[in-house]
Image 1 (cartoon, rainbow, N blue to C red):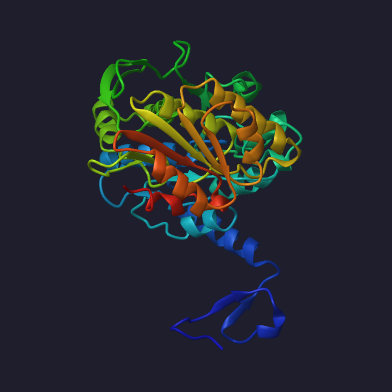
Image 2 (tube, helix red, strand yellow):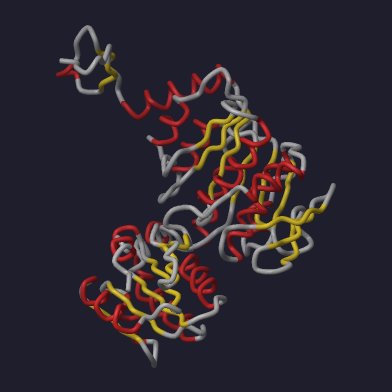
Length: 389
């Protein structure tokens, strides 16, 4: 029995079949086919983004640029984390005749998933941000992760341009045997098509083959500069003027839970990076904290989906912290015990957030800088609102 104004339903269970339902073999496949039909009818220019880290940040910068370039109502883009085999088709179901472009985020945690998403999205431009250790528990090695990400380049007949990370260890692998594609690269090396020079903490010069420009950035960390360069590479492929790129970048603000500085007036500076964590994003966050002036507190939770390498990566995290100018490290989670064991000063492990918070509040002051990070299941954001003097 349908309710709430529903006219009909697509179902895969014959027990509920009626005159107001369409019976299909697979609901997911039907959803994908409807999305593909809409995509083929409207034919927007599709930019697909994947990578181990930085997908969402790169997408948000690119959306800011493209909305500025195209004007209102012409760009469709992935909302939130709608980047899987359900979220991507649902995004495409929002396509309207007015949409000339779409920026789609493609996520995965198993081999073959990017292939399926690529066959739905059918991108014109494909961007790979980087190759990291995210979801490595489902793969034998980073080599296998790189192969899975490259599925984006291998499974779209209409792909015109590949945007690739020139600084990445897997750049040569990603670019190999893709001579049929126009390749645009981004990175800090001058060999990259789109590269940059860091002028100070908030300003960089972005170099393109056509024109260079200075831009103020509001996002923390070297990795976010890389994300900005990736968005510029996509914009360059679409012939967006550098003036529009500059305006779009400068309008981009930090994203909730991703190196987001919480405005706390005279209270400690709190950096909320609780959205998620993997080994490479942990190192990036530590680098950001290390670069700041003040007494540095690192508050961490476990990293998930590392499989047989879980202990190894948590041990390496401790070794990385030890080499960094972090004043205090406070940790929660069964695996961060190993991290804390690598440290030799001002290290604390707790079996509850309440105990961690109690200790933290006793040792911070108004000049402290506190960075909070952990994998999604650790819900580290629960600490953010409670870290007040």
